Image (tube, rainbow, N blue to C red):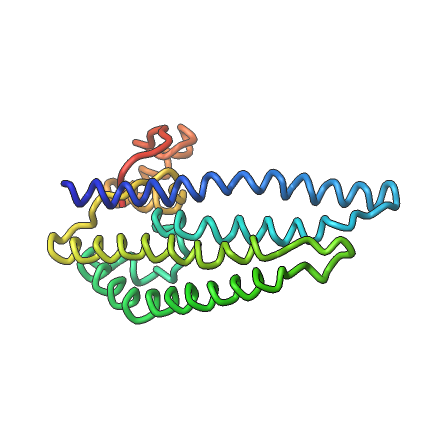
Length: 217
C-alpha cells in the first residue's frame, strides 16, 4: 500500500506540472490573436509574436509529456494490444520501456543538458526577430522534462512488474478518459445493441460518473 501511495504521488507531481504549464495555452492564444489583429487590421506586425509562440508551444508540449505518460495517454497502435491479457500487456510494456524508453530518455537528458549549457554560456538569443530575446531559459526545459519523464517511466515500470506478478494493473490516477475506452468497457459488460439504445436514449454512457480525479487503469 505504501508503494502504491508513492506511485500515485509521482502521478500527482506529473499532473501538477502538466496542468500548471497548460495555462500557457491561454498566453499563446492571446499572442497569436494579437499578432493577427495587429498584422492585418493595423498593418503593424509585432517583432516578438513568432518567438513567443514557438517557445510557448514547445513549453506546453514538453511539460505535458510526463502528465500524459502518467495517464497512459500517449498514442499507441493498440488494435492488438487492447485484446491482450493484462500480464501480456505488462510484459510488452516492460520490454519496450527497457529497450527504447530509458535509452532515449537518458540520451535526451544528456544531450539536452549540453544543448542548454552551451546556449547559456553563449547567452544565446533568437535569430528570428529583431529584438532577439534570450532562448537559453527555454532550452533548459529539455533536461528538466527528461528528469520528469524518467521519474514517471520508473513508476510505469513498477506498475508493469506488479501487473506481471498479480495479473491486474495497479490503480492509476485518471482525470480524462477517451470516449472510445468508456464505450469498450461498457460494451464488455452488456449487449452492444442494448448499450447503443441506452446511449441514444440518455445521451451518455451508462454508469458514467462525473468526477475530476479517480483511480483506474
